[in-house]
Amino acid sequence: PDYSRYNFAAAAERDLKGHDRENKFLRLFLECGAWERLHSLVGFEQAFIYMYDEPEEFKALMQAITDNREQLIRILKATYDMDAVFDMNDLGSAKTSFLSPSMYREFIQPYQKQLVDVCHELGVFYIMHSCGTVDNLFGDMIATGCDIINPIQGCNDWEYLRDNYLGKVVF
Image (tube, rainbow, N blue to C red):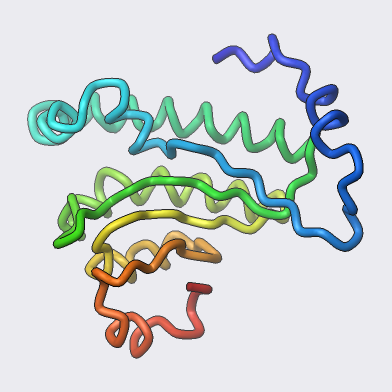
């Protein structure tokens, strides 16, 4: 979208009316991270086919979506002055992750890292959301620099996550 068409300042004034900025944490929920947006545009199965058949085009689309999200985060920080961004990219099913760790590192991680870095540059916490089994991706998700990973569902190996990542990220 062309964000210049929207009056974010007026929306923030309306939305934050009565918000106790001094004592209340402000988290903005950005539905559909880059991966979610991409597969909502082309379909889940087709997104995986593009990873294999046209990896450079897949990455170019992920970059365009990520650049757009970066622009939105910068606008939202300037107008809402949020404390955290909640970014949603479901990467797992009840039994396993949708991607291998190497696929995550190549096709998803660079774009998440870009958004984490922007948030940190702006003094904003980055909350990464992923439903499903993602314990095999956890170390790579933490490597992006995300501050919080939400949720950690029961399908993940809780003991493994605790033993390996406690103190490195907020669960």
